[in-house]
Length: 307
Image 1: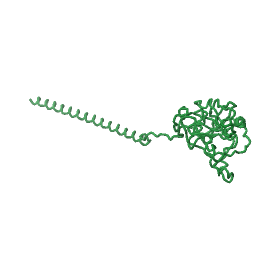
Image 2: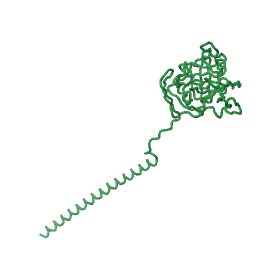
Image 3: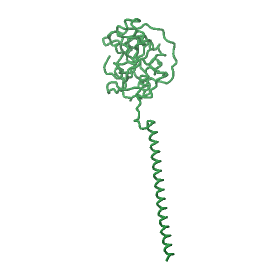
């Protein structure tokens, strides 16, 4: 009898010990699981903190546009070839623009550091062959040749326009009244021989039209200077010497189509410095009339008004 009771007590003890062991194992597993969860949470918080400190949760920053291209409504002479890029624009060094005319080639050194958007536009349009087989429609005051309008009417250009830059203000020699009082009186400045500038029809209306100055000329300080002629000046001088076509009434005019037909057969822009010809001798300046079409060498490609 006593032996039977001893066995029962031993079995009860063994059962209790097994229960205690199971409960201990369960508690140990629970502590391990909680520790794992805690570690994962801590690691997650650490990662989130690093991301936050490095700006990972900030909204994506949109780069400020270096150049803006305002759309132009479709119209007579407007040619849609898309728009140049707004960022990653070249802002240093020099580029070479080769303007192949029917009479020969005019070479221009472009300066992106002073007129980055105009140079970007020239580069883009040249890549689109925008200027190829287009006329130079205007000879003005025997001093400058204007080109860049595919329509040849003076009102055409691409389907965008862009703001003025590098206007010849304080740096222009005739902007100083003491140097040239007449220039100050009629609000003109000197565009010296060799200047290449954008033509326009008002503030910030630049498109594709540009003019090549082969004789010093005084104009309002409204035209973005983009580069310098370094080759082909003799060709431009010959074109200028031939004069303009007579007006509708047969009268001689100093503002109109060149008497010698001038077309751009191709225009290219490359990222190399041009070979420069010797600088031409200074020429006598030509004053623009105070109240005439000189206030606008020509409408820009984005403009619809006439000069």
